[in-house]
Amino acid sequence: MQKMAVLLSGSGRTLDNFHSCIQKGFLAGEIQVVISNVKNVMGLSKAEKYGYPCYYCVEDEQINAKLEMFDIDLICLAGYLKLYTPPAGLKKSVINIHPSLIPSFCGDGFYGNSVHRAVKSRGCTVSGCTVHFANDKYDEGPIILQKCVEIAYDDDISAIASMVFAAECDAFPEAINRVDEKGVDFFWERVAG
Image (tube, rainbow, N blue to C red; front, top):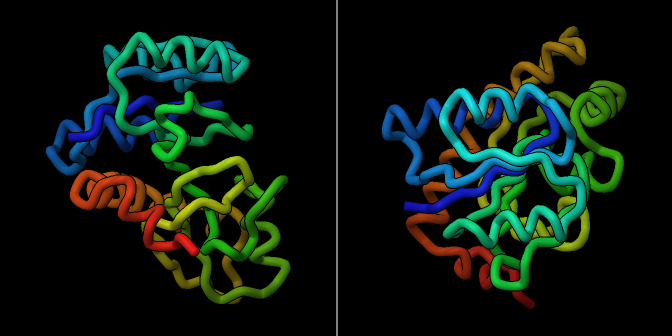
């Protein structure tokens, strides 16, 4: 069972998904704390409603000071829209989800609809999501899991975003379950060298 911190910047849709999956027994995790770098976002309201300790912290140092108050195995970036530097003891334990099939349409500036717009502009017939460990560069850590969705020629950005988010709702909990089963080091060692 993974003890999770959830970092978010917005509406908390991924937090909703985690909470639902935990309640149904589909996710081998427990949320210990929720932190947002944006004040008064819906995600913090949802965390409070669910009964999770929640905080607003802007800087990494503030976030990491809060995390020290909890027993944490994984830090899950759930729509957290900035590069994050974790405490040294959790350096390899930060998981992110990205709304494309990395290495396509990723890196600095590629998030949310900017990704889906680029996918549509390129005429891709598939997209999807990637759950990966985060490091000090956007979207470059070891991949845990990817899910693919098929795109019809006439799908607009909204339709693509909806399909990809549905895939994310399956992929992120499944990835956490894989980490719980195999351990963090398995994924880092898999791509070493």
